[in-house]
Picture 1 (tube, one colour):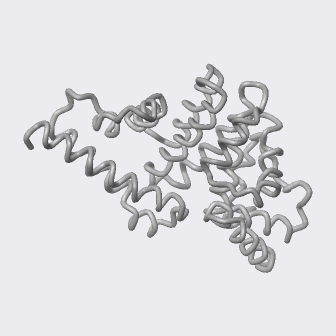
Picture 2: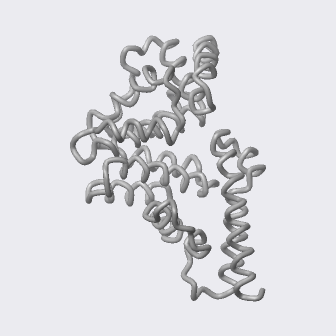
Picture 3: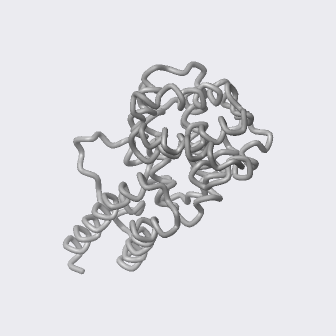
Length: 256
């Protein structure tokens, strides 16, 4: 691959503002370098296309970016009509600045032609970030936000989110954490047990083990060393603070 295309795209993406824009800029730069516009040269409708993205695009960050756009677009499409509120939610949760909308929109528009094939993109992300379930929970939480942008999630959206969680390799506790957080009004303080994905009746040792697990999965230094996109490393710093605060609260309540 000619590196010039990636350099141009990366610089353009950097100007978009934010690490996600830079990732997508590099993806678009590679597409331009290989002569793929106005179409990007790969399909979003399944049929093992997601499995070929790594080879076609070259980097983990680029595969991450394309899979995120595909999942967001297909989620918006799965109940029939893509609504403006869902597009706006996508831009907000992934911090897409106005100047990046046109290029990222090209990927989004191709992906939203059909909701079919989303499982392959979820599976690809699940395999690619199998060492970072915490980040995958953050991605799922962002998808919940998109699904609820036009009201409570309907059956089609709930099925999409559940199957995406399965593709990500999240266990029941991870699914519960994300779903419960999404259902809770912003004004309501979360239960520390909800954050851990455990019931209040859980044993002390089980809670302690879950705290250690979540700290391993979400520690910013570990995430950065594993090549996690910078935006999610920044989010992990906030998440670790919430995890420790929840653990401290449980210890006080239980006298540990």
